[in-house]
Amino acid sequence: MRAVVWQGPRKVSVEDVPDPRIEEPTDAVIRVTATAVCGSDLHLYDHGAAMLMKPGDILGHEALGVVEEVGAGVTHIKPGDTVVVPFNISCGHCFMCDQGLYSQCETTQNLNGRKGASLFGYTHMYGGVPGGQAEYLRVPQAHFGPIKIDGGLPDTTAVLLADVLPTAWQAVEYAKIPPGGTVVVYGLGPIGQMCCRIAKHLGAGRVIAIDRYPDRLKTAEAHGAETIDFTTVDDVVETVREMTGGRGGDSVIDAVGMDADGSLTERMLQTVKVQPDRLTALHHALGSVRRGGTVSVTGVYGAWMVRFPIGDLFDKQVALHWGQANVRRWTDRILDVLRQGDPIDAGGLVTTEMPLGEAVRAYNAFRDKEPGIVKVVLRPGEG
Image (cartoon, rainbow, N blue to C red; front, top):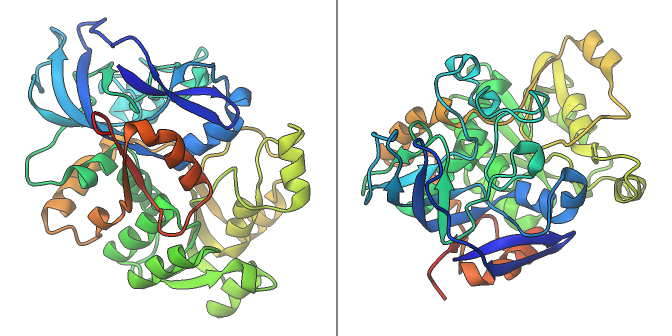
């Protein structure tokens, strides 16, 4: 089969690799019909060597497809079903799964419990499981993970249930926005855009969205957000405070993570591995929340922090909630919303579709934030 593989820093390619097969009774194999490129994939594209990627690893953790084969322990799906596959691999019955913490599943945890559940296509720190940017995908723990999709939901919407929609939904839930309250969203990639829409849907009175790219700012505005281009203000934190009566937002969401723009110094420190992550967005998020407010972090951070304003957070009584999305915790609620006419316009998030063979072009266009490209879906079997 053909698959997108990591070859080294800033180098991916589409290669012939062995077809997957059933290895355990709880496995399934699906023929992938839609698979998306995520901002987290760009972290691997840039920093994979420092995150235990190996040349030849198959990328991708957002996949939808048709079931080809199931193991003897899989009964809720069958060959011919269309399913979306959550990016975290969870058993559904361990202690952590019973708490709804599917991204911490004890059955698939890694590095003797020092890392959470295995993830598709996301480094050997998280299991080294081959990813979904391929023509076929082996799905471990398929007795629980895959979600059957009915014919009424477009596949470009359904594939977002693998990551984007539950990640954004969890970020909003974790933000604990008061009814009618104000939430500030840093970063208007796919996750940030959906955070804005979901926050409004769940009762936020005001959404302030922050980015630098005009098309992304316009998209957020079209869905009811007030926007700030952070390149046009002297101090984005002070601007947020001025817009909120001097207090800051009731809730703030960091949807950027480790590759925030940052200063030249931060970029250099990250390049030479002195500082693993660029922390600009996180510091701005922490500075933009009011006293007694909540900061929800859904942008990925990879390692330790050399600077953390713990004294300010203590003084301001700020609550901080973050982590990988627990996908299956949210998908039933999200499916109900999508089936009620998609009021969050999830279907409008996908801006670009390309054949799997054009994955290199897709990665470069997404990484460079070419105008109009917000979410890219790759189509195996096309082109």
